[in-house]
Amino acid sequence: MTTAIATQLKSIIDPNTVVELKDADIYWQNKIERTIVGDSKPYLLFPPTIDTLAEIVQQAALQQWRILICGNGSKLTWGGLSSNIQLVISLQKCDRLIEHAVGDLTVTVEAGMKLADLQTLLRSQNQFLPVDPSYPETATLGGIVATADTGSWRQRYGGVRDLLLGISFVRADGKIAKAGGRVVKNVAGYDLMKLFTGAYGTLGIITQLTFKTFPLPATSQTLLLRGKATQIAQVVQTIRNSGLTPTAIDLLSASVVRQLELGEDLGLIIRWQTIPESIEQQQERVMAIAKELNLTEKVYRDDAETELGHKLSVITSLPSSNSAVTCKIGIAPKAAVNFLQLKQIIEGNVTVRIHASSGIGQLQLDSADERVISQLRSFCQQNQGFLTILDAPKALKQTDIWGYSGNALKTMQAIKNQFDPQNILNPGRFLV
Image (cartoon, rainbow, N blue to C red; front, side, top):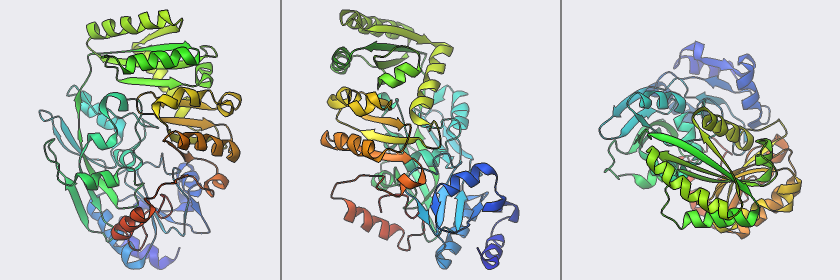
């Protein structure tokens, strides 16, 4: 990195917010070094405002500096590797609450706000945002949207796209643009918001977001069933065909149940969040079915339920070591139980959690075994699904992490060329 580039940066932004990689704290050094290849030593920037960010990007476009974009960096290691990076830009200081329309059940925030902080603000008004991503304490709203990262609440509330009403972003030329609005009925720009959700920051830098919010549920309770594959599959199908309204239905591999110290069978998590009377009635119906199928049951309430949710997140979503591999998977729901019975999962002690209705889930291997990953990906693809490597050692990241076999690459490349013709935004992070 030349002195000339540093001088140009410091004419735009407070020098105290421009950090050389060698001077960054160990957290940022590790994250960045695991994300880039080559000999580049980028600067780490923390712009305090969106206008400052736009100025930086405008200068980067003129100079063709390549940029990595993140919030708190919790998912910076997701996606592909990038090379010849000059700038790493964190939006963690762009974290203001813009507007909370309590009566309209909408909230607008800057992209650097942490989800945990937003939930605290919303809770004061008896509301919440039904998003449950990896790294829930540190993940920023911009990072969640950029990676389309949500969990079990997808069962009741849908994915990130379903909650997003409006978006503002800095284009690759440094101009600020927006789509959508701040009210539920406004659908202008809906397709543009779909494009940015899950695009890994390759089309623009998300700066502001408007979400639908929901009233806090009166009560929450979780039922965990354990048993053999045939019985678990049967109860899932029964619930899916019923009028029951759980907010989560998750299948758990035997290795997850084992780490919860609950035995060696498959598991099924069912969570309700509504008035106590409804929870009691619905749970009784499921427990009656479970009894007929000889399933073991355990009920979690209050702190025990919170602790269970935390344990499951750690077991399935967070890398257990530097050699671990975490993946996002998708599979036809009817094939999910069969997936959990694969020899590679049982004998390899692979942890898996799959949302029983959508077939979307998380998977973790202890080590980067390319053969096993290929076999698991093949099964997913044969059953209308996918397997994407999220976090992994660098050597594995230099292989095909996406495994995409569809016919949309030309369309994706055309969109990327239109939004970022110089390929300066998160180069290499996504498919194109």
